[in-house]
Length: 181
Image (cartoon, rainbow, N blue to C red; front, side, top):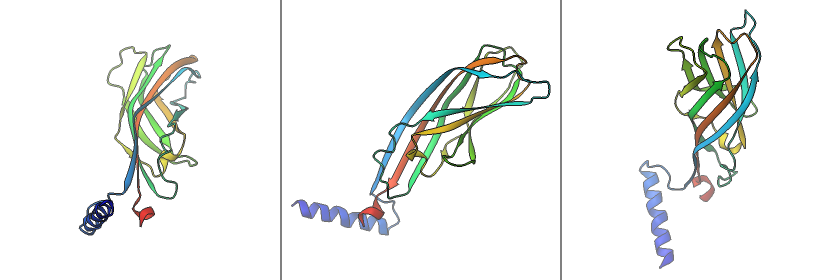
């Protein structure tokens, strides 16, 4: 009896594949939200001609890749949920800011969040909004990523510190069809 049901499943799967439906043989791993807080990050005082400051932050993915097969291509989707910078000084001079993710082992970056100043009122915190999901192949196989924060505008003229809270959702899926057949 068991053989019959497995054959029926395989035959129906092959029939679905022949009609253009996606494979039934896949595995998906997802972390709805992974967060990290970095406290007391130091930033240098801006010289009169300085227009931007950049800071790199490592972001953990943990064991998301453990259930994914090593011998198959993995599609990965990363979506920024929160990126907030809270400083010990006024940040109202920052006109624009972005956060990017750098591909492991490469120099290419992908913007995942942006901020544009809407008023000149004094503020000690800025929050970047997501630009949408980023698809990076095999990204989930890395234990951590590199986020790059870049702020532009009239920066503080004295050394300053800030706490950064970053949260992102990660989804990865791999097709087992090539491994099964």
